[in-house]
Image 1 (cartoon, rainbow, N blue to C red):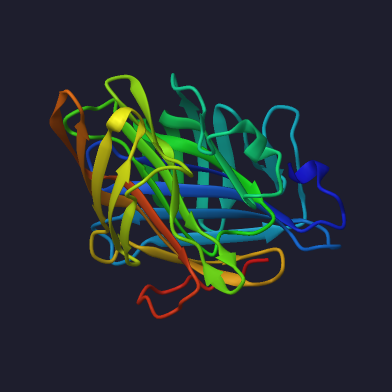
Image 2 (cartoon, one colour):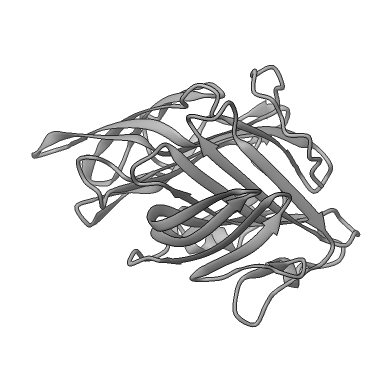
Length: 319
């Protein structure tokens, strides 16, 4: 998308991944982003956050440059030695260096329910998950610390647009004790219209036993959301009468704060924890209720305008 953007347009685009240890509360969240203000040259940024529930705080790194492009084999290249494609991610920023390979048997998840919505001006944020469930191998180095990834579960995502939602939640979960192949991928947003915010709208899917269930949508009824920077409770309806109740909570001191800029220069505080605890209760007509738990397999992100949420924001400007 960014390579074909008009010089006059403002836009952003991100390719990202998360991977977590299957046995320990350790996870990585890595983003390759493009940020372009109207009439200006685009900039590329590499973001790397490593979460460890035993550490006093997440490790956060970021590097920004105007050197970016589309490699012959891949989606995006930032700087001289960082690129991301359909089965690999290579990169470095600050003290962080990574060389990862991944594979997935899952087809892409397109969160928006209609294809025309990806071509239309609205919504202003588009998103997909090229690999809503994936397995990673490779290395991630933080100075003298080296993490060996061997069959780590995770996902690969992609979003782009002309501005971020006014307020949003991104929720992904994997590595459930009761069903190792299950996954949840959900985006929830509110947009500003005439100085007021719309109700929450959710789009995503839940995969159980190899069967994918779409959640939310514009016509979905009964969506309930109670969110804070480090926890969220929600109730969401899906297709065929399915209902999911979700509780997610960040372990103490594991949330990472970042500043995200819109193309017009406005900013959001964004808090993300990619080793969050999640419980899921699923009810569907004609089937017994199902409960799933993931001790550290969830990613919970909240984007917001307020700054009094209590999570330190990393000292890296955006935009």
